[in-house]
Image (cartoon, rainbow, N blue to C red; front, side, top):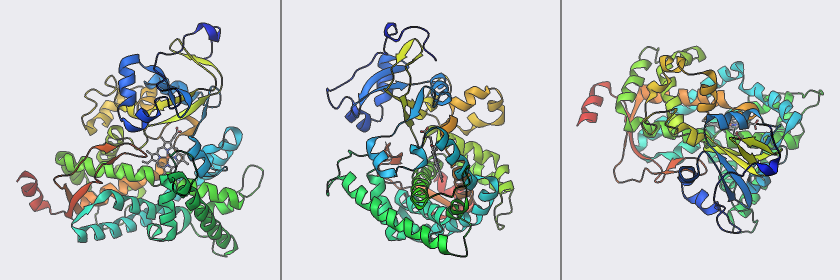
Length: 456
Ligand code: HEM
């Protein structure tokens, strides 16, 4: 909200700045309940100090609405220094204002329904390949496998590369990703230093791929092909440097979060066989031996509810930072210019006033009857796994498509059980995953024996 009185007269939110230099940085990274505990102590808005910057935490869907609908006016995207340094200056997430708007329009072409339809066959094929492999292994640690799975799909559909996870690019990408949220000191042995070197190798590899493509008479049908041919508002094509930064961003955004989402589905289905049975029963309405279509996927309404609830309970992204551009007011408190603000997806999804018994997995929360009772505003800012406003996830429909294809094919053909003696506690950063990597027994689904084995 705009400032209605002088900035000096409005109080700052309550809170604890922690240690002189570090502030509360260590607690933020180490304690998954850091924000929750501080909110319990100080209320819906509190101040603290993170990564050397004074920072405000704001909770509740009104806070989300204020932050996400005032982007560019009172708030601007903000990234930790390590992320900024590794992403490349022309990456969409670092662009702001009109350039951001124009580039978003251009990149969005890769996620329009027509483009999405063209992705289904590849997603289906790679899902089958991985399932064949997993079923042969019988017992496996699933999370690292799921990362390779989503990376292979991203590489193929975004840059036309086969089996990306097995290439040098895949290895360089892993090291680069590990440095994205690290202390930005570039020494040979630091995470950031290693990530920077890998980033240079990635840049060279991507530039070579782009140049090869530009010279080829066969442009291809993936996102890179589309971006090479696209023209901006001034009729200009994207430079090689920008193509490289944008593809690198999409590869990152397009697989890390998706891995967390499909892994959360696998975990929750193993823990809720009653829900899994209903998912399977819905799948029986569709011709299981024919290729999937966008139309069929749209008709899987129960699966849709399940996937929404999966991302409510375990959102892949917990929240995001903004910088305050102009001093403003929220709930009677001053939000000073230059401070950081963290809007919280995880805390919103745990809000008991929006989601009674919020810890419970309950897909019926998203049934059409329940949804009808909620205002559009409540739906938009009370449930936001993909963020909101002008920075809402660009790959949202790609992500929803891949999750649905994965979930439908696995529910039709396979079953899995959690192996005993493993730590299922969720590590939250960079994206949520079970501490021991989700160890499962994976086998073909047999409708006759399933009830017996579950109930024995
Ligand atoms: C389940 C999977 C995914 C989740 C939960 C997710 C979540 C998010 C969230 C919360 C944001 C907004 C962050 C903010 O407010 O600062 C975001 C932005 C973004 N996402 Fe995703 N994402 C997913 C998958 C994808 C995929 C598959 C792609 C691309 C292939 C993608 C590309 C992007 C891009 C480019 C942005 C930045 C948009 C901008 O700054 O204008 N995401 N995502």
